[in-house]
Length: 408
Image 1 (cartoon, rainbow, N blue to C red):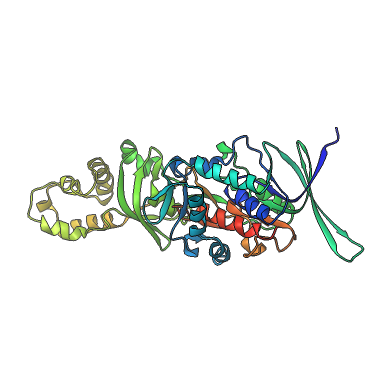
Image 2: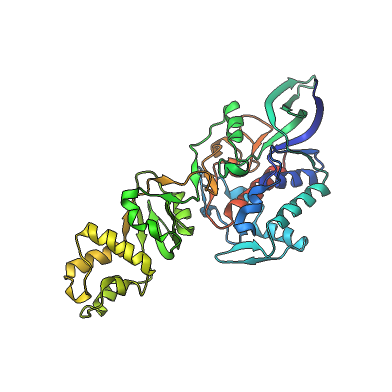
């Protein structure tokens, strides 16, 4: 059966945050746009973000909140479409929101409000949709016209039809959360056109530990505490959470983007305290060490930590007035710098984002267009730009989608 042929100015593969933003901006310019997505449910990653409330941006977004092999790449797009620009869009639509902490903004109601808003904006500028629809093949044709002008054309074969467009935008996201449809399709398109993709790995993800190293902490799953976690010269001060497989919580998710296999994590369990000073205050007391530490840390954690770490130090649990000075120094050092080596991460199924992606040296920072293939654009998570936790990755989606939408 011969497939129907449909011609558009712009075809966007991936109807998530970046894809819809790009479609809206292209449509505002009078471009005919088709959004194609393989999923049955629209923008599932937006829907589940922020615990269902959608952490849609961060007021304090700056280039330093992003990781990339080309750290300055994101500056142009972030400057051209800012958090305030997205906030203005919400306020125009009457969507109420609140700030939780450190500039993190969430919907008062639900993430579905953001999805509905983007759909309305797409409809207002005449964007067409094709979903669910599997893309089978992408071809790129160049033809010399009699006017000496080179005409470019992308031919896309889907399960429904053949699409023709002069601009093709890849907004397919990364590998994180495959259970809601994540795939490697965007990276495959890059490879097809000879565009370099930097190494990929899960990020903003929980870390796992070997049974031997962590066996004493298996029974305290669900315990959380404030801590400072550092690795490779980068540190985050937020909550850590013990799980049945290792550690999670905001501080761990943040540091996971910087941690490399084989490296130690350094955890300061009492970042606001001077443990040596605490010890000196009770130096002559008969209080047991775990009872003292339980004034500052969760009791179940203290018991597990003392059983594990003091055994490693060959120090026994006893009253404070029975410790030698050098023993207390060792314990204090461990509380301020508990060194542990993760064995890995919990993987893409639990990762919020994918670290790495389409090499930004291959793209224009102003337009997101491939330097190698005119008319081919990459936006959002598929690009090697990865934000910290706290609304930065969605802001990158809005900003990169906006940048491409101005020129496609």
